[in-house]
Image 1 (cartoon, rainbow, N blue to C red):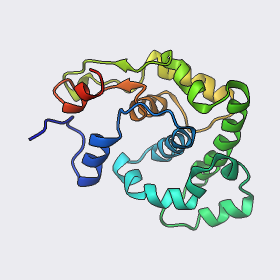
Image 2: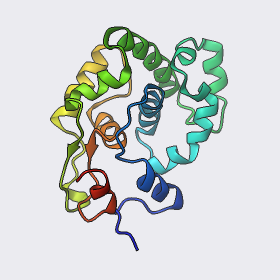
Image 3: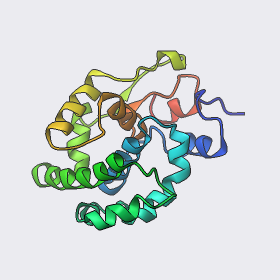
Image 4: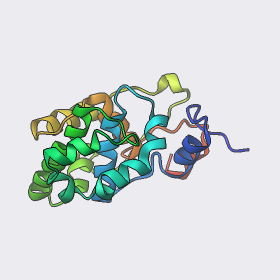
Length: 187
């Protein structure tokens, strides 16, 4: 039996942990998806968002950033009626404003990937956490990322959400050292 980090309990979170969480991600569409989903997760469990992820993909045009940036007030109202996503007006509006901000970032940096990964100098930070209590909610890198994102018009991306984004997209390896994924991902 494989030893995992202590947080995945259900089938969906175990699959996510074993195949996605902490894997370095360099695809702009998937990075934008991660931004939207991590923002939607604020105040909720990640399990809730994982269960709604496919609904989000359908509702938000597979996270095509150019399409999402063009969403109108009428499209937002339709999204707020969709029971398959978190129907919070601020979070839905933030997805649209974050798409617009992403397009501006891409103009300046060439890609969302280059922009986000600069906060870890393009290389994953490999930590050696022994227990879940050792895993922080933020880091100096997540504070820097959050400040810069907010200055560029992004919403729902405080330091804690940015740290979760960094963990999810492999900028930070916070798999516990006893977890089989820690070592598979370069620990």
